[in-house]
Amino acid sequence: MHLKPLNPLFLCAGLAAAVGIPASASAAFLEDGTASLELRNFYMNRDYRDDDKADTLQHKGQAKSKAEEWGQGFILNLQSGFTEGPVGFGVDALGLLGVKLDSGAGTSGTGALPRSPTSAEPVDDYSFLGLTAKAKVSNTVLTLGTHAPTLPVLFRNDTRMLPQTFEGAQILSKEIDGLTLVGGQFRSSRLRDSSNYGDMTMFADGATGGVASDRFNYAGGSYAFTPKTTATYYYAELEDNYSQHHANLVHLMPLTEGLSLKSDLRYYDSDGEGRAQVDNRTYSAMFSLLHSGHSLALGYQDQSGDTGMPFVGGGTDPWTMNTMTYHHFLRAEEDGWQMRYDYDFANTGLPGWGLMARYVRGDNFEIAGADAKEWERDIDLAYTVQSGPLKDVKVLMRNVMYRGSHTTDIDENRLIVSYTFKL
Image (cartoon, rainbow, N blue to C red; front, side, top):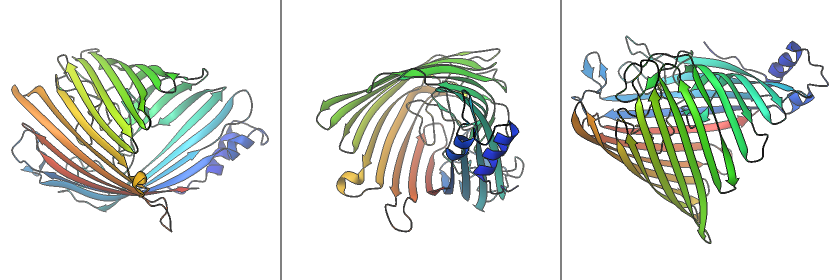
């Protein structure tokens, strides 16, 4: 299946006609609309360094040596304005198309392309079209349909060729200055390498009794006490799997001229629901020194309870301090510390260049009854072309190294080249 080109005016005008809105009332609906098309060229190579570990991937009964794929993604994002009147109506559309450039049964499995569960052969292309209806009263917006949440209790994955999405309803309100309230329910999830929606599942190390669910409920919000201090609280529930409380406090404190300290404190408290056995508390803190484009951070994460922290499985990113590119460091009772460095080269006369390097080490956990430990190191080098015919083209080079005492070691490289057309 291939996506046909979509005209944002056709979508907007079609909705206006469907709900019987006069042309005069739908002027803002059309004029405030935006449209963009992102071209994302994605290459990934993951080298498996072991062939004798319990989690080693298999192909035709033998350990895989690598997963390698190259593809071209197209992300069409259409957003209407709102009709005039006490209640404004609108519609958004998200069109996704992924095309295989190079892959095969022996090298598939990067999460970029769907593949056959039996032969492991990847598809030549896949696509998705999601619509979102929306209504606005004052500064409160209700949305129904396709969502790409970036919530601390549910964070969509966008680390491959195409982003993950969820289907459901959400209400977001900003009626009080500095206060943002949000709540809703998602009924299904579409994975980053899929065209179809399905039930949601739980991932939690050491947990038992989890079942597929079509109800993820959540409510919470954040309040900015000052421009430099924000507090957040959320409650979430994956029905028949787990319930979860989350709290977060972020504070930015100037130390001297040009030097500041950022503090980020996070807490999760999770318990099982139904027959699921889940028991976890996760505390984490990160402190970052910021100066002239430099950021040097040190963080620590502590887990207690009988299981690891639960989150929606299928590639969703848990919003925890030590969630890395490859691994999430959320094994039962695992503790971990992190060191991270970021730099913006604009201060050295090289605008558009950026560097990120981080290292996480986890220990104090067990695998199959044996004491275990693990670490990961990530390096990102990014560049945005500043001028000329390739202006605003973005290039990201990502290198990952993971090592575990009882798990498969990997070396990984990714190259992502993207450009967004404003339509």
